[in-house]
Image 1 (cartoon, rainbow, N blue to C red):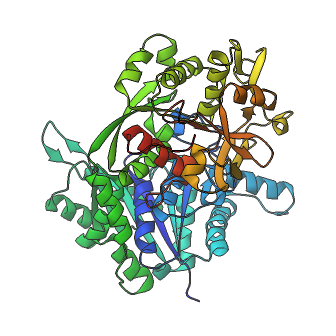
Image 2 (cartoon, helix red, strand yellow; image 1 turned 90 degrees about the vertical axis):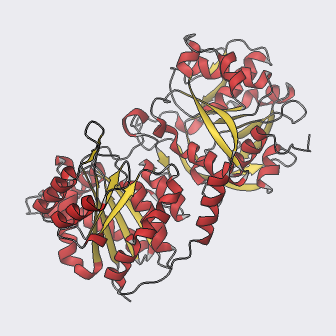
Image 3 (cartoon, helix red, strand yellow; image 1 turned 180 degrees about the vertical axis):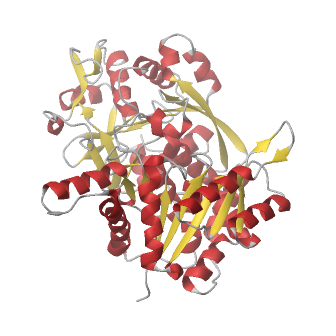
Length: 542
């Protein structure tokens, strides 16, 4: 058995420069060559996971099959690789120190002074190797979050440096991703920030084997030559990842410039041709789609679009196969409830709406008002998680006549708690990792819209919630016309909808279908929503 290979991706100049998409693209390119690939994201923050962070701080919390609350880059990895990853694919400083301190308290290091080197760095290396050992992967790609020079990232960079010594030059490959900014005042492409970033990486003890230069426009040859010279690399080892409208074209751009060939040649001593035919077909469909539809995205974190990145990408996946190009109208639900935004104007402008997930009081009444308008106006609407719970609240208030109906999350004193805390959540005193999380079986009711989308009774979908539709109100809601189209094994409501004779498409799910949508396999719920918005076909059952 040949030794496992490791690719380490570091970043420079600034964060959010594109390391995640570079990692995901390389994972796809190596996978398309027949290699088994795993991708790990390292986040240097002290939080144990992303679950307790505000989306404005760090973007979407991506939920894995096993219930991990992870960084959004894990979502990119899953979408590009087309496979499910686990909570172990997201390593944080919090996890590392928590583990080392727990071992110290248990006496594992008796007689030793516990230090960053070797104990913290050994724990980091152990976590990385564990992912490869469990999966049996040929290649493990590790993205180290943040930028070179950040204090919190130094132990991870030191662990990476040690891995080259321990695993060997032929089994490790370092890629540095850094920004080359464009100065519009002078019309210049500046490479000096990249040069300084590489210099800082070397100071830490890491010589990159390839540099991926992010830029607004394609870099001129002179810029590439300068970077290659300062990085002590052949010019073919400097790859330019310039801005493109379609992120799913990025693997093809990197393939054309030979990034995966460089990695394969160094790590495996050969060059093989990738099979990217299905990916190229998807990209062509996506870019050929011309029929525009407007989708209102109603949420409370709309100022940072990364808060809902999996939903945006799931929309793109579904739209490509229907020949549709969605135009997103971002609607801050807080603005609706404050009267800053007119919900009637949103309704008139949009072809359909997605009521987005979220927690807390702010923006709730704005979401409820948007749900009412799209329900009564009979335009397609999809509610996800909190969006489903508030759909039930709206229906209870305006159809069932329970004017003070609410969720106890927002109003614990409501006389009509149509949405309430899950029984198993009562008495929990810790917030991190304690929600109903991960993939759970969903039993779909035959004859519903949801059944027509899945075509089967059982599906597995991911969850992230503490509250559910109160079972004591289900019969009354159903009598008033609301259809329960899916149930959990425990008997919780998983989805509600309206009959096609009452509404062209009104569907809300407690589960998060966006987390399992893939470019080559769009989520059924999003396929249904997109076709309804575009008016491509109707539903015959009813």
